[in-house]
Length: 104
Image 1: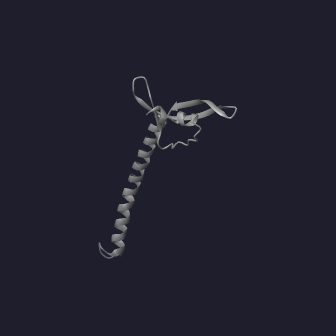
Image 2: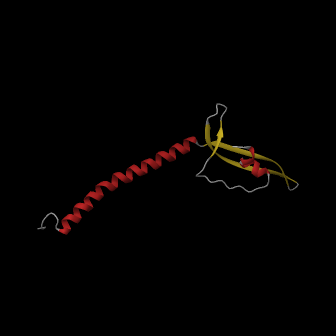
Image 3: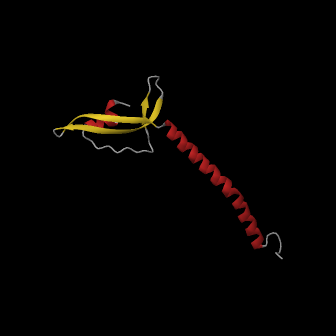
């Protein structure tokens, strides 16, 4: 990502930036590996002029992994609960429609 595209550059230019938390911003380590970050950038204003900015960020790799695991778990549980209920509904409909014979 070029310097012009960085959020801190936009803040220094006086732009208001609201980031989308579903699309994390990535920083790069010295070994060239990338990691997702959550950051807060606050402009430093002196005499109504932006003279700098303070940026704090934190690595959200673990949060991203936990969110992915939570989503996969919810999907699996939903499927496992839905499957037997579908079979029970299907069998109930067969009984009510008389497809398996007359109910006594």
